[in-house]
Structures are given as structure tokens and as C-alpha cells.
Length: 149
Image 1: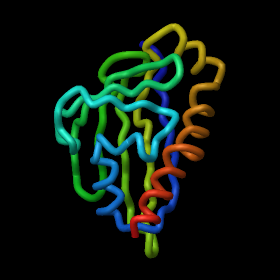
Image 2: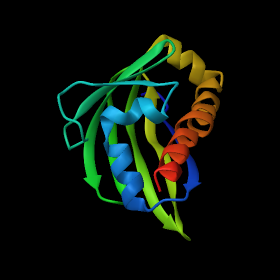
Image 3: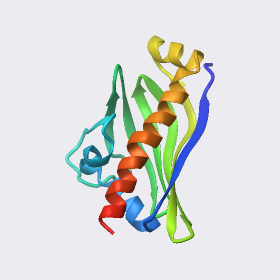
Image 4: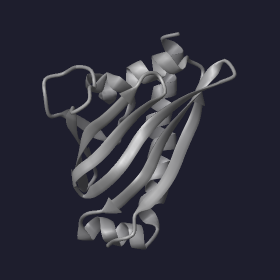
């Protein structure tokens, strides 16, 4: 069996866990804050629910994500079901001071294509993931959450 990878990327946002959770659940708004990744819902829902599926595409890679669990406002459990990545990931929202620590957690992710196996083997995949999360996803979430306050 291939090696699986675990990692946590996080940021502190000046918003409540409920507001953070709700925004991340609004699947059709991802384009407002996550620019490097394209998110295509594979159903008609506007809000994530258990069983929702969507496709993430970034550069040369694409994978299908399924919502495995929702625990408002603490976490969203996801499963990379097929594509270039497979495994379990999730969002976590923890109150910290007057804000919320938002974390995107790779619990157990494996590459599922030759291209991604090479990127993981060279140590590139996790560096690129951290850069994308910090400079794109978290920056966009912070901007949107703090401007809507």
C-alpha cells in the first residue's frame, strides 16, 4: 500500500466559528475566496450536506470530494473519493480569543496518479498545498469574513 500523508494548514480569522463554518459550507461561493482551485458542485445543492460531491481542479490535477460528516460549527469531514488524490481530509473551526482558528487537515491522503506520486515523492505536493492554502484559500476566507463583519 502506498504511503499516506498528513498535514495541517491553518490561520486565525476575526470571525465566529459559526460564520466560518457557514461560509465554507456555501459551496457555490468558493470562487469568491479560493482562486487557485476551481470547485464544481456535482449536484444542485447550494449548501454542503452529507453525501454532497464536488470536483476540485487545480493546475494539472483534479479530484472528486464527498462530504462525509458535518458537525456545526466544529468540523466538516471530507473524503477525496476519486481522481489524482484519495483519502480523508477536513475543515476544523476552533474558537480562539475573539476569532476562529480555521484548519484544513490532511488526515490520510494518498496520490492516485503517476503525476501526483512524483510530486509527493519529491516533497513538492505538500509545499504547494501549504502555499495555496496560506496565500489563496485562507487569505480569501479572511478577506471575505472580515469584510462582511
